[in-house]
Each structure stands twice: as C-alpha cells, then as structure tokens.
Length: 334
Image 1 (cartoon, rainbow, N blue to C red):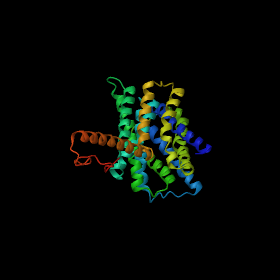
Image 2 (cartoon, rainbow, N blue to C red):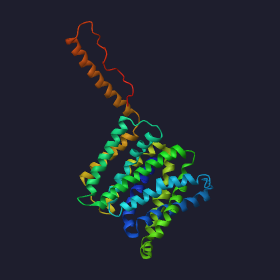
Image 3 (cartoon, helix red, strand yellow):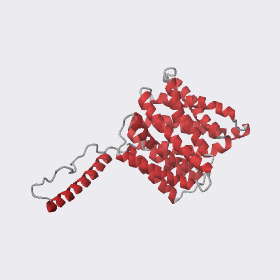
Image 4 (cartoon, rainbow, N blue to C red):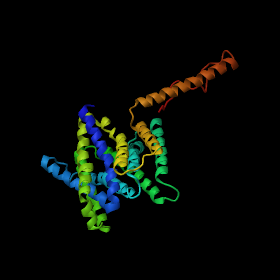
C-alpha cells in the first residue's frame, strides 16, 4: 500500500470514527430518528446529483428493490440504532462495538452462502462475544436498563451490516458499488422520513445544529463512501477492509479529545478482544493451516503415546496401527 493509499485509509477511519461523535452530539439535541434520517437523506441526495454531474447511471428503476433492502440493512436501520444508542452511550463504546460486523458476516455467510464456519472463525466469534461482555460491563451498571438496551442496539446494528453483506453477495453482486452507495442511502433516507414527522424536533434546535448535520452527512456518508471506493480501486478490497480495525481507535481518540470521554484499561482490553475476534474471522487462510498444523502435532503425540503403550503391553504380532488408531490426517480438518 502506497503513501497516498495509507493516508486515504487513515482519513476514512478517522471520518467514520468521528461519526459516533457526531451522533453523540446530535441525537440528544434533535432525536435519534432525525439524526439518522438526515445523515442518509442528505448524503443520498448529494450523491444522486453527483451521479448526474459525472453522468453515472446507477440504474434507479432496475435496482430500486436492491437499493431499498441494502439501504435499510446497511444504512437506515444501523443509523437509527446507533443514534438511539448515542442517547446514553459514549461515542467510544459505540465505535468499539462496531468492530463486530465481520463476525456476524461470517456467521451469515456460513448459513446462506455455504461458507465453512471453521474453527478459527468460531474462535473469533467467541472472542467477539467475550469482548461485548467486557464492553457492556463498562457501559452498564446495576439496574441501568437503558444502557444495556443501547449496547444491544449497537450489536443489532452490526447484525444488519452482516446481513447486508450477504445480501449484496447473493442478490446484488452485479450492481455497481458506487450505485449501491448512493441508491441505498437515498432509499434509507426516504424510508426513515415518516419517523421524523411522527416526532419532529424543535425548530430552534434544528436551526442551531443544522451546520453540524450538514457536515455529518456530507463528510461521514457522502465523501467517505466515495473515498472508500477509491481506496478499493487502488489498494484492493482486502487492504481496504483494514479500516474496520482502525475505526474503534479513531473513535476512542476523538471521543477522549473532543468529548472528554474517559478511556479505561478495561475498555482497551474489550477493544483488543473484539478486534482479535474480528481479525480471526477475516484473516487469510494461513491461520487455518497453522491450526491444522497444531492439530496434527497433537495427533502425533497421541499416536506416539499409543505406540509406546502397545510396545510395553501388546504382543509382538499386534500391529501398531490397528483398529482405533488415530489417522495421520483426519477428514474434516478445520
């Protein structure tokens, strides 16, 4: 990865890490529904005009169904859940929990895409859940149901991201990524719009935070997605995926510096455990090979003990590898 791509990666992680800070500021002021809808609707409208300027055809009519499903799973519902959680949770906690997305992506890929849920991925999922328990212990205390619900909302948002990834690969892989970015956000903004009218925020509050909302939508939704697709094109999807592991770091740093949120040792431990779990899920196959190597080593140890025992207790005519001996390379290795 070149210097330009590295800078782009760090910029994207900082922008998406800051999105939790924006929600922490906006949601208490104008409500969760208004915050979620404006970030997606404004970004979708801006990207639609951008498509007109560059004469890009996203296939509005042909792909409207895909835009609606992906928009709800990948933008609308997660934005609403995170905005609700921002009413009571620190931005840094939300940023940490966001790193669970690859774990649920692996689970749903195993269910609907017939991908193997290997021992490595299972271990990663277990680590991720343990990290959630650590982070939930930080965010909640005895009798604090609101905070616990907020943690659950963050986890459910990452479940939606996992479902969105599976849907795109199974049903919408033919749709251009830039079209998905613009169309899904516009669809999400339109679907969430009725929620704003059900509980409209005070006009004075909207006017006061309007510049922040505009920056939030343009920076974290519109610009960041265009930058991300540029990074995928130049550095490849695997390297671009590392932004997932940088978002919690940037989220914690920005929360501590700008919102004066505390960063505790337990929070850092929870972050490490979740990121370790996500890394096991998305890591390359050499970890599978390493796990298989350890498994074979243990098998050889067992065989060695069996042979030694048979040498001392069995007759000379008894074969060393008789019935019940452990095979060298058992089928179904993870």
